[in-house]
Image 1 (cartoon, rainbow, N blue to C red):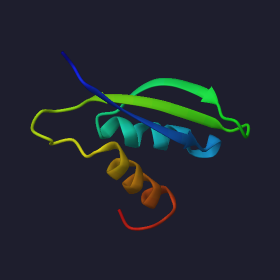
Image 2: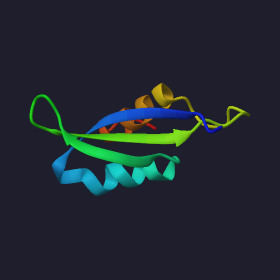
Image 3: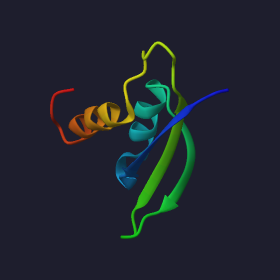
Image 4: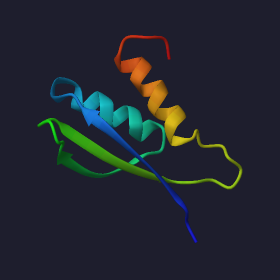
Length: 74
């Protein structure tokens, strides 16, 4: 049985393709885009959890992406 991990992230309207491509390169599949509580877009992603732990955890991946899009070092 496949076990999944999930991730949510805000989508910046001027940089949507770059954000989606970044997550896709890390193995995340876009599940849905919805309007967030404050009016912006929020993307929901999933990817299978590997038994060997080769995937970063969702929190580590989110932190890496936040640094990239905030202009920090990856």
